[in-house]
Amino acid sequence: KVRLHCMERPISNRTIYNPLQKDAVTFLKTSSETNGTYTLVEVELADKGGVGLHYHKTYAETFTCLEGEVQIQVDGNVSFENAPKMVKSGADILVAGSSSIFRRDLSIKEGINALRRCVS
Image (cartoon, rainbow, N blue to C red):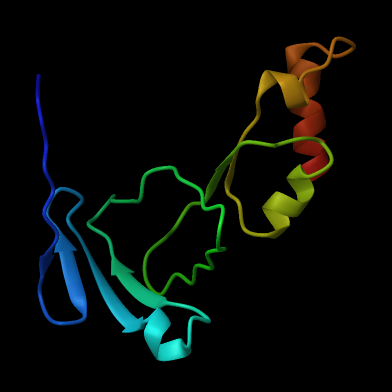
C-alpha cells in the first residue's frame, strides 16, 4: 500500500507551491477581500502540467491564459444539443459518451461525424 501526502508549502503569504504538481498559486484577491463575491488566483503550471479533471457544484471558474496554451476538456453531458455551446464557451476536447451521442439509428462513425458537423 502506497500513501502519498502532498504538503503545499507557502512561498509567501499569498503564494503556495504544490511539489507533486509542480505548480504555484498566487492569491491576487481572496473571498474575504471581495466580500465573498469571488477569489482571483494566478496559477503557474509546470511545463506540460495541468489540473486534473474536476468540476464544481457551488461556483463557476473563468480562465484567462496569459502565456502558453491551455486546453479545456469537457467530460459529461456532451450531446448534439449542447456541444456547440461547449465549444463556443472555450472547450477544446469533448468526451462523448455512448448514451448521449450514439443512437441506435446511427453507426459509431455516423455519430462521430454528426458531432463534428454540429460543432464546426
